Structure formats: C-alpha cells, structure tokens
Image (cartoon, rainbow over all chains, first blue to last red; front, side, top):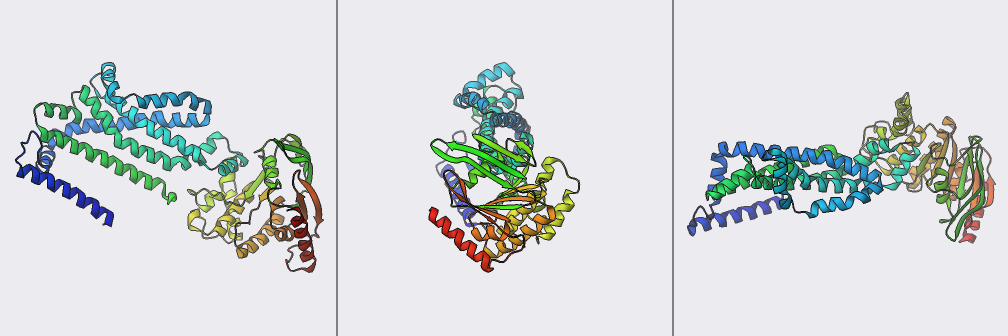
Length: 246
Length: 242
C-alpha cells in the first residue's frame, strides 16, 4: 500500500469514526442521521430489497453509456472531419449542457414514460458531452507531421482515422469516458426521482417519505459503489488498450 | 529523373523561390546544403504538396505532376513511429495502407536484419534507443514502393557513432534498392560523403550558389584530402552568407 493510500484511508476512517461517535454520543435519532455502522448494516442485510432496484439503475446507466457512445463517436468524428459541421453543432452541444438535466427530467418522463427509457436518455444526455468533447480534442491533438506522413503514404481519410487519429485520441476518449461514467448515476437517479416504479432513486424517494433515512443512505452507498466500480472498470480497459502511453 | 523548373513561391513580401530549378538523375543522390532558414524545408513542403507552389513545374520520370505527394517516400529528423505499433508493424505501415502486402513482411524482416534490428521486431518504439527508432524509420521509408526518396535531415538527431553507421547503411541500401534520393542537410560533411552531387544554396530567393559534382567512388572517407578541402570551401561560402 502506498503512502497516499494510507493517508486517504486514514482520513476516511477518521470521518466515519467521528460520525459514529457523534451519533451514539449525542443520541441522534435514526430518522435524522443514522450511524455509519447502521447504514452499512442496512446496505448489507437488506440487499434483497436493494438488489432489484440497483439492477434497474445499473441497467439504465449501462444503456445510457451505450447510447451516449452511439451518439458521441460518430458526432465527434463527423465534427472533426467537417469543421463546418463542428461550427454549426457546437452551440447546440453547449446548450445541451447549459440546460440543467433537472429541468428536462419531468418532460422526458412525460414523453418517454415511467419506464427505463426516460432514465437511459437522461444518463446519455449527461455522458455524451464529455466523451464527444474529449474525443474531438484527441483527434485535433494529433501531430501534424504524422498526418503528413500518412498523406504521403497515400492514406485516405478512413485509413488515417483507423490507423492514426483513433488510436491517438484513445487516451482522450478514456478520460472523457471516466468523467462520463462517474456522472452517469446522476442522470439515472434524477430520472427515477421524477417518476419511476423501480430503481435506487425510486427507493430513495420512498424511504425518504417514510423517514427510513438509513435506507436512503444505504441506497447512496450502493450508488457510490456502482459508480466506483464503473470507474475502476474503465480504468482497467484503459490500461489494457493503451499500454503504450506510459 | 526528377526535374523542378522555374519554381516560384512567395509568402507575402517574402520571396522564397523566384525561378528555382533542380534536377536529380534517376538513381542519383543529390544533397542540398544551405544556411538554416534558406527555404530547404519549404522546398520539401512544395515538393510533397503540403504547401502549394505559385508557379513552376515538377516532373518525375517525364511525367509532370502537381506535387510528389504520392510518388515519393519521405523521411525526416523525427522518426514519427506510432507508439502503439511494434517496430515491425510501423515498418509495414506503407504497404498496409497501399494494400500491397504481398512479400512486404519478408522484405521488412530482411531490412530489419540488414540494419541490425533483428530480434527487436516486436518491441514497441518506446523500449528501444533513438538510433534504433531512426533505423526503423529508414526501413519504413524503404518499404514505400516509390523509387524517389526525400530525406529531410534524416540523421541529424543521432549521435556521431550511430550516424556513421546509418550513413553507410543508407548508401548500401540506395544501390541495392535502386532509389533516387534528394536529401537536405545542414551537415556539409554528410552531404559530401553520401551524395553524387551537392548543391550549395543561398536564400531569398533560393538559388544554387555552387554545384559540386563528386566522383562516384563510394563509400568515401571524411578524412580524404580532396573532401576536406571541399568541405572547408563550402563552409567558408556558407559563413559568408550568414
């Protein structure tokens, strides 16, 4: 274990200990702030309640990521190959981020219903932006001498794309994807808050209404673990595909 | 034969070429030396089509072309190897793109062997020395099917020992693969050692100040008396320019 790992672990343990002691020492009621051990107990022992909801949310996030990729990859590539399209599209891109997703959520639920479609779209709206922007940045970062070398080799656009631009932009793509997967949970959960019959967001709203604050925290814990797992997975894929970048 | 005639190019007020002409005989090795900033690189940019010429004619083997973009192999100071490909895959890139893979692997392996890269075929570029990377770039240059090769200070980033050995490899491989070479360099000695003809250039507009034809006996030695005298003379001329 490295020094920095030890430091961050110590900080986490310190915060949790203070929290735990404060809850017990000050006799804070469970419906205001449950102690960490109690939250952990709910998160572990009530997994039969949490798991089905978590599965729905996870499905929404994964589908959201796929949808975002299906939009972002061609969009970034077309924007890169046609600067006029980039200029035409970039205001829309920025606007799509300037509108808060919270504001879109009720509309999407009306249009797409209480099922997972509205949540998938919500997650995708959040994720596609960092992926598109970072991929485009990666394409543009490609060294001009390399581009010229490919031209002299007689490479057409698609050969250059496949053999030069795409591998070159891969580290950028992955950093965008990392940002995307960590915020993906936000989109899905907000969608579930606004209107859903399943999912961790739905569970949180229900538990909150019944003052089951420990269950709310347990759902948050599960969401964090899901986000972290995806982040670690993307990092693993990154190391697998770009071993040349170190 | 490579022929460039009456080449003209201006950038605003700056006239880089004002009727510049050049010929390289087929199978020949011509070196251009000149002070830095004299437009040597611009000449290559025009030849390869990166920069459009204002006027003039470029022809290769009797065929007039707009530029030599897809007719010449090109090698420069930077090795420009792709970090995600092995040395061998880097060398195979030209044939992979031209989709003429037949026999290319064997040719590349042979060249790796000739240049002392055998055993390193599957190494990534980051794991080998700068000299080895540049040798790999040379293999890649020779893997182009084009007979014409443009060299833009290909060896100037290397240490003296590696450089010497690559110079002799370059000569051997030129005659073996019957390439026609046009090289630009700062290094007067390198030009005199390798080329059949050395053109000493003056800038703005670029002009040939002196044309030095060398006898065909190669490899030459830098310590030959005749060569040393010519080198001194060329350096004097170039210094007069600065």
